[in-house]
Length: 529
Image (cartoon, rainbow, N blue to C red; front, top):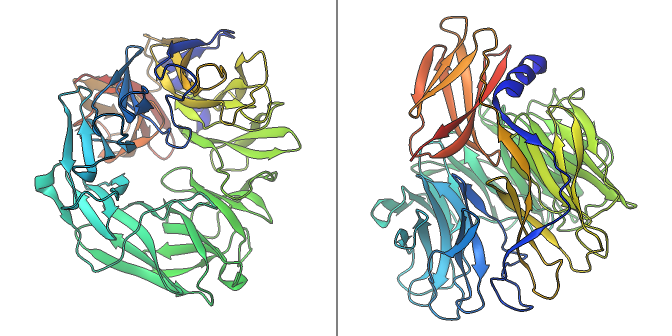
């Protein structure tokens, strides 16, 4: 199966010629002097089309929403006027815009959107009549086309504007959060809507919401003190992990089965009360679980198809994330960061499809990003180690360095990856301590092949945003996934072969992947605005 997909990808996907460029370039000393222009704790960005969006500070207006367009930084709006910061966060692509939350003294914490222009950067909804410092959290785009978020212990459903935003009824206390110890979220897109976990004293409850909130199940701990994290959809329902130092029997990987309509504990490789430390998503069917007696395990929720994919896992202390990204069928993640041996694993969720794809000689990794068929990250970013920018290609099983800094990094998070634009890799960095944390780029050699070859009659054709999928077998059922250039799944479709679907509200480069059961074939398409 992988051989057939590999052949098609070589013909049609982006081709990155790895150039060992040894010079990094400062985009702009935005916050002039030694102060930081970028926040090491609020650094997450999104890419819409080729434009990158994130929070930045020019030293005059505070932290505000910025865009990198054609290599140039542009502030989109001074939301909290003057030197105060609106501290925009939760950047989320929705309806061909970027939505985010921001605070100002007049409107409080509110939902904003931008189309990439100052005049098109507007407040869409403020949930409170008073200027509260609270703000919407957990912006989540659901399959039903709605944008969900939590505010003031309530769940909101929005279609992008104040006029079509409302509270989802249900009388449930809703808090969306990321666990500070184990780093996983307590909410996730599920079916047509959203699922989330709540806690009431000793009782943990799992909920599902679309137009109203419905309880899926609950479990009771003997202690008030327990953590829940890593809620994700799998092939058969939902899974998440629970840990309690005061009630070890409550620990484990929990599974909600829609078939049985039950919430129960799920064994992980035969371990009933599994000691789970991290959970993150591989694809719509599987998650990767760090289970301390086995290592990293690929789980689909059935309890019978678990695969150990990496056995080395030390180095994940409290609050340390498993840095990872998704590249097509593969997850690329750092699976061990111990004894100055940094291991990066590539997996498609099976034993045969898992391997150590890179082993830099420097620990302390940055976040990972995806571009085309490549994962890109940095190693050695803290504690005096030598920063190195790495790439990995899971389809070829190759990896290597793109850049090695000439000296050690004595600041923490000295490199934070942002994205690729116009053959340049952009990242935040404070390697030059004379000017603080600013935006840099590294030139790459990236080309897109113009030759398109068909694989035995399996084709994907783009006609002005209408995507046609053809196979040699008529009436063949297809699962079609649409990914953006960062590797994020943005749409799921079920089709019959030799039919089409419309990519509405999208622009830029996307990767269309079709599954027939025997074959997977992929093609990049460009959708114009």
